Length: 502
Image (tube, rainbow, N blue to C red):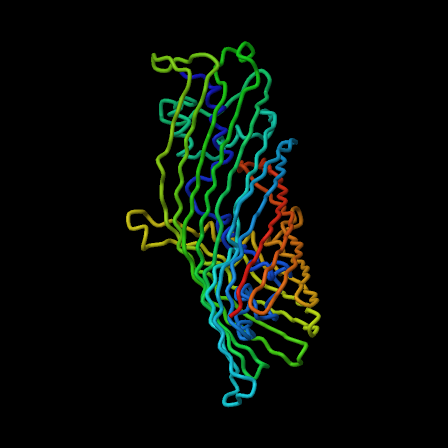
């Protein structure tokens, strides 16, 4: 019989094992988008719903296209850095990730009647095509700690909730064995020190970009109407590597041989979605603008690919069925599954005060109920797979998530051809019960620019500190014994926009 200590290490397979399943985490990850656009939009905190004449405003209120006086083209590359502190089991690990991004590229074709042309009350219209980054997943995080194996630890996971795929990996890597009726033997003690050095690194890559076709028109330069269709491209890749090492030297291991293990899991998601927006901006006074808009739910078809592998080393050779081993390896071939996600609708209202040639002030409020997100089967791409019961996952979405209000304020000061900007955005906590953890997000932005008759150049910087709470594994016991990794992610984004007016 293989040593029971092998099986104790196999229980470690629970930590980062998302498995091959779509759940409430996916629903939130791909529904909680952020404001984006050219540097001007970012510099004022994304507060564009009542402002108009901004390619970034197509995301919030396409009626703003009706305020364009001339056509323009712009491109906005950016540099983003994410620095994380991940605290788990009383220890903190730091990591960082830098990336080059294309935050926005777009063109607006505007046609406007001359001021003395009174043939029609419709003064002009603008058609736009733009690509905007609305979500960024690029992030590295890691932690490493000494774990006491005698208290509420991961060794208990398989005792309560065995996972067939993970059990198979452990068995093939010589960590476990079955009894005479095929049941995996449950874990017992780990070793003399009752300590384990456990670590994990996670590398997240990808983002969401939205390709928009929009049109806005001006009625008597008082009322502006607009609509847009958005096509959302989603790319997400997460690689988790879990390591576990028995810190006791071989002489102190009661004759057992387990040394270390390395579990690698990769989750890759690709997909496309579609949504639509309509909006109105009204100018009751020359200096005041108010706007409202709504966006339909985004319907996406996503394909998920999951793979995993396990490598184990032993401090001394082990004998299994008459053969000697110093290591064990096992892997699961990539598995693919398609599903659908319907993210919640959004409603936005805002106001702007234009201070003549001196600048403006603008503010937005956006409502979104994350509890309305829904997962479903993609029958068109799963012809050879049995349908998944998404009832439990959707019940979890309704139970865990609720409504949130996202606030954005910003302003611009003008002096001759120069511009100075500042903004702030607060994105509310999407969780229904947020008494324990606050997952709201605050964004601080600033920017500058210059604008001439046929050319403009802008730069913006955005700073935010995002707090996330990552659960590496769940032990469904009473009382709950589920650890939480506290992640503080400091993000800095610098964007430069170059544009032509024609």
